[in-house]
Image 1 (cartoon, helix red, strand yellow):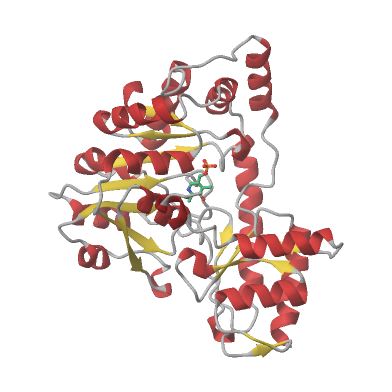
Image 2 (spheres, protein in one colour; image 1 turned 135 degrees about the horizontal axis):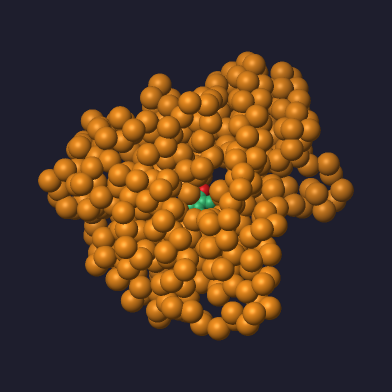
Length: 395
Ligand SMILES: *Cc1c(COP(=O)(O)O)cnc(C)c1O
């Protein structure tokens, strides 16, 4: 039977090949160290779980308003005002089934066939697929290591055409934990003034920032930025709630209304009792997120320092999220353990095969000189995996 062209065009997550191999090895009893995780290794804080359990017991098990329960939209507005200096009315906020869904649905709501979406590389793997599913075309802006893999205003300007409909900003970023400074964001927003180009600002890692890094929401940069920005955030990364599937989008009311119309026929509402947990996450937090952030920061400093101590590995210090994204291309062209290393994929698969450590090839993120290592794992695992990398590259 026929499968749609749309579905056939979606590529299997390129990160899966290595992950599947790692699982096979683990099943065979091999002691695999995994740096592949794209989610926090902490459990969801108890105060959030208890609120959801109480909601279940109280019978909050029915359909809710399509765009999310009023309490949650109100709590999101209060959070955005207090922490992000952003004033949104509850009607300008929609709760989605994870921020991944926010990205997909917001693109469905504002993009048309043939539109172009500017996306700096390295980028999160979901963006190009979500863009294509909206009928639009990703326009990749390759960034430089010298600029900490951040897009410059000149690069943005050069990528704009009459067809440009959207620019994606993801700061702090996945796969590298790179964070734009407020001034850098201001300069990018300035380039878009006077155009009708949307900004999709994926702020999912906003709470996980390190050192003296400052976070600012794109929509808070200026009146003009506010009008053109779809602010996307969620609960997965800050509150360690990946399995709860809760994200949200805030922005101009006509765009949020359009998302609501789509959502009413696609998914109806986010899970009722999960939404009650999210209200607690936002309103009853007492240091739980900060405790996780502090632990991530320690690991990130340690991992980057160890990576930089390895010959031919250059790792910018992550300023946010929980990933290191070192350039390992100095080793391309070498033969290690009988395998010729030519790109991020051959590097990752040979390393897994020969030293039983799983990481993610940077090619998946549009940056083939690099590999991604998640530090959402224990210090002991980090040291064990990096001992193996040091030894493997030293051969
Ligand atoms: C993890 C992640 C998301 C979304 O996560 P959800 O679990 O769908 O909320 C969005 N953007 C980036 C860059 C991510 O890494």
